[in-house]
Structures are given as C-alpha cells and as structure tokens.
Amino acid sequence: MPLASQQFESKDVKVQLLLTGGYQYTVYLKSDSPLLHSLLRKIVARAYKQDSDLENLFQIPINEGHSVLCFPSEHLIGVVTEPPIFIQQSENIQLQNNYIEASDYIHIDNFLTPEEHKRLLKYVLEKESDFLPSNTSTNDINYRQSLVLYSFPEFSELILKKIQAMIPDIISKLNIPSFSISQIESQLTAHNHGNYYKVHNDNGSPDTATRELTYVYYFYQEPKSFSGGELLIYDSKIENNIYVNTETFKTVEPRNNSIVFFLSRYLHEVLPVNCPSQAFKDSRFTINGWVRR
Ligand SMILES: O=C(O)CCC(=O)C(=O)O
Ligand SMILES: [Fe+2]
Image 1 (tube, rainbow, N blue to C red):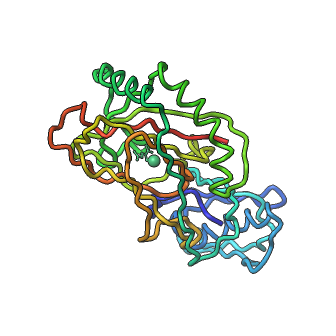
Image 2 (image 1 turned 90 degrees about the vertical axis):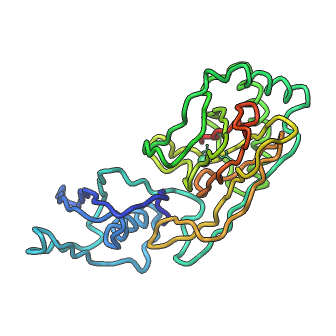
Image 3 (image 1 turned 180 degrees about the horizontal axis):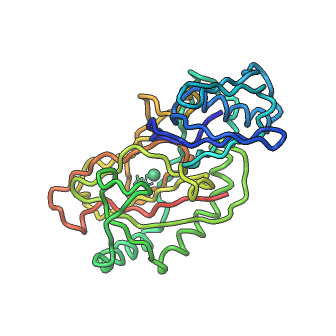
C-alpha cells in the first residue's frame, strides 16, 4: 500500500481509531512508525477486500506506556489522522517492499510550430516584470528557486488544447489506466543562474492529490545560454509501506521546444541551472502543469 508522500519525515501524528460499536480512541504515533502503517494497511485491506497476512490483533501502548489498548483488527473500521495522511489508490496497490518501480516518461520534440515558439518567447520577455518568486506547498525557501508567471491567457489556451488532444496517446504509451480529465493546470516558469527545484512529487498534499500526470514544456532562446537544469525522474520503491525514491533515475534534457509527460507521483528534481549572463532572456523557460482526474 503506497502512501502518498515523499518528504516523509518522522513526526507526530494524532490518530483517532474508529472501532466497531462506536468506540473511539486517540493515540499519538510517529508518522514512520510500523504500527501506524499497519493500521492504515488494515483499512486498505478492508477497502479492497484483500485480507491476507495482516495482523489479527492490535496492541497499542497508551497512557505513556502504562496501559495497552488491545482489539482484534477486524474491529478497526477507520482512522482519522492529523495532519492528514492520504493513501494513494493506484494501480500499484499490490507493490511489495523491495519492489523497484522504474520511472517512465514520454518526451516529444517540436511541440509548438516555429511561429508559435517565436511568439511565446517574445511574449515572455515582455512579461518579465510580472514574474514572481516561486514557492512550494511547505513554503520552504531553500527547496525551490525560480520565477513564475501564473497568468498568461494569450498562450495557456493554445497549450492546454494541444495537451488535451495528446492525453489519450500519452496514457496509452505510459501504459496507465485511463481516467477522465477534470482539469489541466498550467504555470510558466523561468530558471536562471543557480535556480533549481529539489526532490519532490507533485501530488503529495490534499489539494494536489488528484494530479495524475505532470507535463513540462521547455523553451529558450537560441543560441542556448545556460547549461544544467536537467530534470531527474527517480525510480521508486516501497519502504515501510511508503513510496520513497531509489538512487536510480532517468535524466531528461530540457530540449528547446520539447514537452515531457510523467506520473505526478514520481519523485523528481530540477538540477541547478548555470546561466553565466544571468540575463532573464537567457533563462530556461517552461510551461508546466498537471492533468487532474
Ligand atoms: O522544470 C522542470 O523540469 C520540472 C518542474 C517541476 O517539477 C514542477 O514545477 O513541479
Ligand atoms: Fe514537479
């Protein structure tokens, strides 16, 4: 049972146990504790009617270890966690410990026509003063450095239409279950000298949980005036029932006028960009976003 998280630091979680007969108990567990994961696995097993080799008896120390709460596992009907822990309901529900899932991506060149590409570059340079420093859902200032333009109506419609038309083919090439699209988000970014985005996934919080696919369209002015800025997409494995990245990854070169698609749950990062001129016009530009189910 993969849990949707990547930066899963060990921290306290308030866990309310809902038992048959209307009984409720609140316990505090570490987010990476095997007991918490057993409780969540039990809920998933119930949901998917997969009762297997899971624990039959829970014994949970309470009152600072002076008492123990025991109950048969079939009496557990739900858990309320604070902060929220979302269980990723994916096609990989049977992934086992030590199984390595190789990441996959589709990279397509010549996404825009030369004329559209030229127009987009001109547009972006005119909008330089509207770009804002980027942030992350955790507001960690050292996690991501780049500039973002959130509104670019002159281009977003064109891009979104093209992407929407490509999705059935992308789903088939990535060999993932089909889903109906509820929304396609987009933003425009500029990575200049020293900018980066550390390892993250794109759907690990409650408000991003329905993101299925990430796309990134790369464009820049020729001759290319930066190096670096490669996108690394990590392979994943399940460790203590949590998705974590392995040491292995695929490297995506941010080729001019190309677009890449991959699963939003994959861990990925943008390596630092080296742009000696530090001029905005020489940035590594992207239009990127997410296809939601
Ligand atoms: O710029 C890229 O290559 C990826 C950006 C990214 O991962 C994101 O914005 O979530
Ligand atoms: Fe991302």
